[in-house]
Image (tube, rainbow, N blue to C red):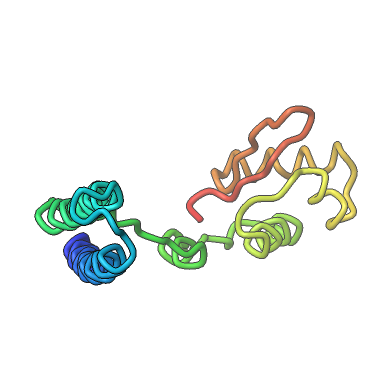
Amino acid sequence: MENKNVGWLIIGIAVVLLVIVIMFNSVLKSAIGATCTHGPSCGMYKNLNIQTWLSIAVVGIIFMIGIVLIFSKPKEKLVEKTIIKTKIIKEKKKQLDLSGLDSKEKEVVKLLQEENAVIFQATLMEKLGIGKVGITRLLDKLEAKQIIERKRRGMNNIVVLKNY
């Protein structure tokens, strides 16, 4: 809700509370008048006045909060752009020139495309069934052709497909 709408709602609540206070005040005055034998000098009248003014003060504070909310400037809205991962992939995706690659190199590129351009080197070894030396040489060739990039992450390498 906007501040204005909340302000009007709070002012409406304050008005309803004021009506209730006035109704209770009149009922209590008639009850005190019927039961108090001392007349206007009775201490119950003094207590009633204190309670009435205290209630009106609380209603006044609530009313003022409503006024402040109506005239206060709402905070600027932050606009967040949600970017869907697939949209980013489609925008970044470029056709790779696979003409100069052998079958194992093409298989590496295909696996990277299936994994959204990022895969651990160890996972790549498992999926291709190649040993450490073989995968290192294969990735060296692809890196020399600027198709992939290897990034060190602790004891592991992450293979990233460039321009994807």
